[in-house]
Length: 262
Length: 227
Image (tube, rainbow over all chains, first blue to last red; front, side, top):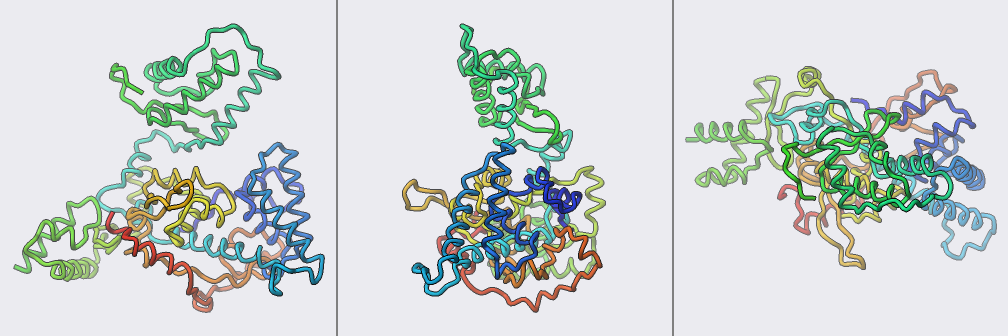
């Protein structure tokens, strides 16, 4: 019932190497994770955080993420400013008007400790006898049944992965300024109907295939919006067999020849 | 009479899809009062326990349900030819935050985790583990989140107050004793297997905010059992 998460396995496969950022960046789900990583890596005490060192390293990571073109979320920047603020308060002795003699680092330690406690609680919950994992009732849950009916263990694709796939494809297919041909413009309805028709005949389609005939950025966007619209209506499912593989779309409606209203 | 009541209740439990509460059984058996039904459920539970079968009558999510014992999970999994996909670590953390801090708003969850949780909330809602409890009377009328009855069922909890207590973190970083983080630690320098035994009892238990928050959730009439 141990629950070594995939991310941690990845981390363990790669011994600590300060230059080995590509892999490690993957695992930072946010500024808190990054901070905890730095605390652990530097083997410093969470109750006595060397703010200057940690701040410098934190900012170095942010720079790296920018260089690697990883979208640095605003959350990372908020934490950076908190760190810099604490650092400045520590640098100027006696200037601490905000606090009442409280260690400015408390502002950092308190939420970190709270986060750790909740992380631990999450681990404890996973150690319980979970339904459909450790114990089974007469009826399997609907959620589990859906998984069993699937042909493969699919990874559901989230919006960010889909956006990434879209961005990559547009960059490949329309490098530089999009040339706008006087091509016929599809409406969203027409594109939706086209995708539905393709799904009806083929069942499963690769994400990229649906853009095969698109020539302008607006066509790409309309196709993309149509896919989102269909997914939102529950008519198709977006998945990958493997994080490395191409994203696929699958029809979730019965092929009975009736024209489904979207 | 009491024997037939027991048999009827047993039959209902056998056929039910969800954990059955004494109140739900009372609807089927209006002649029997709730406390009589509760007592009978407890008798049944003990009987199944002492039978030492591969399944037991489990008290969970304010009701009772037949469940297999965990040692038979590998065989059942093999029969089903699948293992269920687990929640990601991020989803699990988010779920824990909601469980312990409910009722909670999205931005409050994000303050705990430091990252956007929009996608994760959607996944948890789809899986039925959390629910929207209402809207907060604030600008933008933000949604209030809490855990569902399904959450109790999946995580083997009788009620939300049955959640394990949050533990105080005594050390992290330089002097870690936490097993959870030793697991993560990739420490060739420490690799002498000095896994210290962790004694939960030595860690002081926490007694503050979460319980208050939980009480609030119950006072607001959002008792998970009454889904």
